Length: 334
Image (cartoon, rainbow, N blue to C red; front, side, top):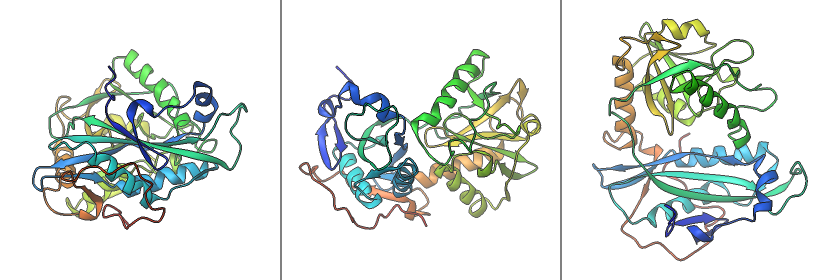
């Protein structure tokens, strides 16, 4: 039996049984070329005995922006998608669990054309499943600069979180693991460091945080935005956003990956060069990871504007269409 059997998926305004949320096989190929998606985490707070979607509205807004840049037209706005996600998360009726949220949009209908035309309506679906957070568990990773360059930012903007952009990351993953590393690091055609596959990168150099500039072909990661703000406000460190040379990877005091799935993932080796002691995360990276952990789990009570509470004590409603205007999302960040 499939792991999703018995759960619900939100699709175009209706909560459907997981096994009924299907499309015809002929709809998949061409419609997927311009499909956009997001990855969002909902963390359980033992302090408040509540599940919280982390920066949920920001993710939904970015999904809509990716669809707009793909010339597709969704029916729902960000507030409606937040409302739908909260209803879907509440349907789990479980406590103490962290949930991953996967919203995506794709061209509606069956397409015979090689390229989906401008103005095509977009279907939106939202799926959830359990995940296990790795924050503060002492994990590390190794990195290798990929033989595949980062795709040309001018040909397919990195700000579009679309499935087609991630094939570059898949090739990099295969390359890195064939060379004994966990994850790749991509350079752009100018030789500057960009990001890993599905996560951004930051370096610690002489007590300050350095992260590649968006203009070098880096996704405007919401986790990246979050950590830059936390590092400045909570840890009082300087942050430099600028072009990063490959050699800086080999000389950095500390390096970590950051993203919804990666969370904060310290690196201990790049291309065979040890990072720090080559075994454990550095002190600053550990402090950043702890700060992020306490923020997403509502330990400190700071940045509640990033947290959308999900009340699991109510029964999930019947299939419904959320308001297209919706209410203001408590998790929005300005």
